[in-house]
Image (cartoon, rainbow, N blue to C red; front, side, top):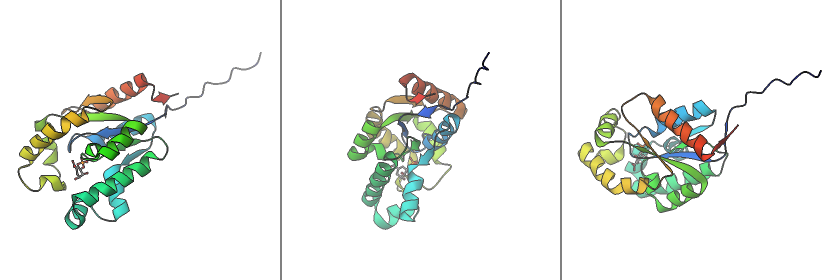
Length: 187
Ligand code: S3P
């Protein structure tokens, strides 16, 4: 009798980009990186890619060229990343607010809004002082204002995940389960 072929344990493959959106401090990069590691996909952080392309840090881009120039670079870098193989991509908080970038993301990716309460965002943002939008005033007030203006737009994302002060694995599991349910991964 012919020997049965051993089953090959293949990693799941993404069929579509997975893009995390949400406010500063929502955990887009931390969670996105872990989701990618879990499913064996590539991970990119749009802010890091913008810094590489510009040869400058984000605070320097804002200080030297201004926010509008930053948004133009952000739009270009995200369009380039979406042009490649499916990956997990963490975006900066303003990316999904840009009409053109949002349209690209809606067309070419499954978008995940990392939703977080104000207290969680304030606590996390206090740990890193490299966010230009939080420099000119009280970070809590600025973040509260951004919740008001941005949350209705982030709510257009395909999936909403709560980002709380709890182990990363909880949000990672919720995302992986949602992707499997949507059929965004094949084995
Ligand atoms: C921004 C968020 C930042 C960065 C830039 C502008 C925003 O990214 O892109 O400072 O407009 O909310 P994070 O959300 O990763 O902090």
